[in-house]
Amino acid sequence: MSNSLDGLNSKLDTSKEKLGAFWLSEQHHGVSKNRSLMKGGKKGAKKKAVDPFSKKEWYDVKAPAMFNVRNIGKTLVTRTQGTKISSDGLKCCVFEVSLADLQNDEFAFRKFKLITEDVQGKNCLNNFCGMDITHDKMCSMVKKCQTMIEAHVDVKTNDGYLLHLSCVGFTKKHNSQIRKTFYAQHQQVHQICKKMREIMTRELQTNDLKEVVNKLIPDSIGKDIEKACQSIYLLHDVIVRKVKMMKKPKFELGKLMELRGEGSRSGKATGDEAGARVERADGHEPRIC
Image 1 (cartoon, rainbow, N blue to C red):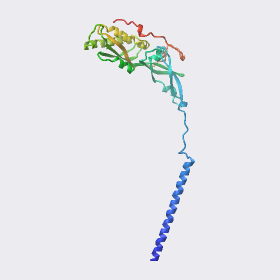
Image 2: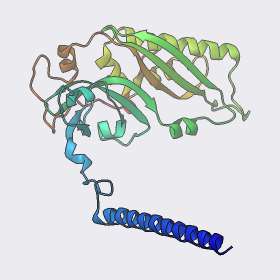
Image 3: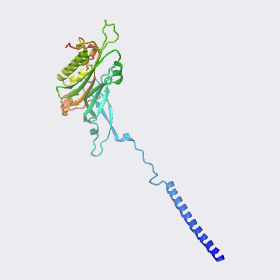
Image 4: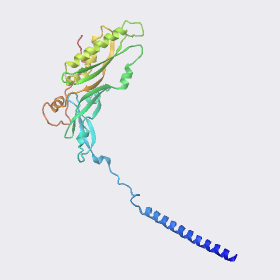
């Protein structure tokens, strides 16, 4: 009996020794890991902060010669790195600019879209690619007790630009009218839409892109439509509300320079360059169709 008890005690002593050695080894490894973290290894090191603007450079955005203000702002682009050229990232960029900023005028509801077609030095040479009006202007014109008339047409200018135009107009109350509402009949709406498409087609087919933009700035096309539709129904707030570039001819640097008012010169535009003044539509007297 005593021999069996002695054997059990010896086994317990050996197991305790093994457990103690295992506990000491785990504690030793744990301390070593914590020390490595306290010293600050590669995994715990912080990355050096890099200024993102250090890899950027500024370019001047130039407007065509149809507008009074030629230098409309600046834009950022990543510097040239290897085979990636910085100027390639600017081509085909579209800038949306208010007409008030382009003409130093108070009418700010028209927005012109300019696309970068070429980069010379630090200048982005832009061309006209579309026009739109602000949402609040469109909402302010839509009212009850009147008829909104809208017409769309695709026209190609004589220099090869295919444009999609949207014109909108609203019926107006006669001076001697007693009735509160002034809705147009379906036949009158059809005649006015036809007249809108005819005038827009005529004005664009006989002019190039530069002359079309000169008509869009004072909105002389809308005044022509309003005057021509007086015999059908009185209209007000007739404007070309949207112009979209659907197709354009192959890029030629000479034509772009002509739009910039530089002809065939290859010189760079200066910051204080100004285009020719375009008269507003206030004094415009459209012809009667």
